[in-house]
Image 1 (cartoon, rainbow over the protein chains, first blue to last red):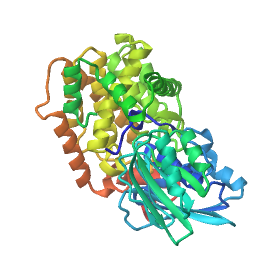
Image 2 (tube, helix red, strand yellow):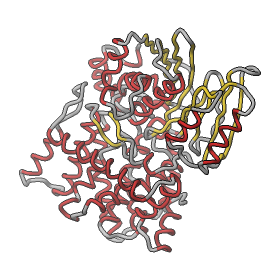
Image 3 (cartoon, helix red, strand yellow):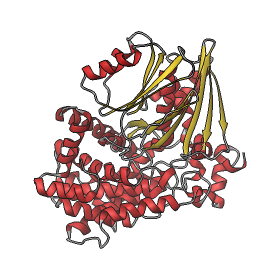
Image 4 (cartoon, each protein chain N blue to C red):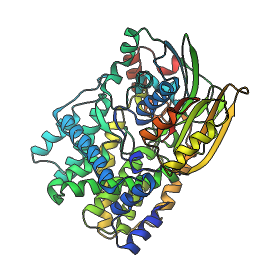
Length: 220
Length: 294
């Protein structure tokens, strides 16, 4: 079941005009912002499928940039996000891709500054609900049926056990978990599907652990 | 947990509970939140819907200039006393239009189930206010019942125009509204399911073909007719009329139709009304260049 909550159906509260192309896009942008953990200096945004054909009409561009500026779906500043980004000297480029994506509403975002870069691919599956399907070249094999978090961490012993201990303490059951890394001892990634939505304080507790760089909800 | 409409109706009948109650209980189970918290959250959505209707009835205009002001025209027409299809029906239509005009003007709305189809559920709900006199609690229940049916459609078919066409958006919204109207009017869970089936059957095949890619033309008027469809189907179900094709099979048919719908008719602004001479002309006027010639 892709949709689990009644508030996926009646909700979200949002700035119009499109839940998939505006609210969903804002959420994809915001996940990129949360994972990057700071305001980027630049962003390249590629639109695929229906996103590529209609992004101007739906405000997909302003919404995704609003998300990058950490605005929620109902934040009225979304409407002026391109102007706000320009004032903050954030360089933004958009591309309309011809390639046919697996899902019609697909966006790829690359953000960066002098200290680093991050690339993710997100899809907007309807009613404002999104999934992140790729991060920094890692394919995320999520069922999409359950809430999921992404934990970026240093590849050190104990890091995985610490995270699962916190989930256990809050009686949160792990349905599926995957760990991947680029090189031994370098950046690694835990993708964890859980049975309930994680509350903010649980996320904060995981973030505070040693060797954890970043925690973000990618499906909720 | 219910996975389809048949299970939902079975649960409601065997446990002698309203569909809205079952939806609240399932939400409590899935999220671990309390009943009070869940009801409070839906109350926030209800308030947003009410404010959007009020704003739309005062008259708004979209940035493109394509939509706005029709809700006001309808309200004035109702007041003239000359309406043919009846005041309650037109009131629902005007309030659905009001919501979508606010949406098109980048105002704040509550997606039900999507932004493009956000008018139907609140339009019908607020139009029933004078006739059925629901209190706040009952209005919130209306949204949970609509949500329960939408939940089934979202999981077994689609609520995305890009994936399933407008039938998945305004079609789903209308079916959800019809089912909730029946419950509020005192109908049975089985009658709610019949109303949903009757509504959806008449929305099957509806394509998503927004002019210039904007959620305006034909979206606003599709919400108008979606609200009318929901009201009439609810009346039919309450009269005892049933659908020959069961609700779950209608939903399944909608899914399969969506899958075979060409991409040009699924929110790409490449076909249908978007590709008419006037549609292209409006697109050129708004964006300078037609989207397909950039």
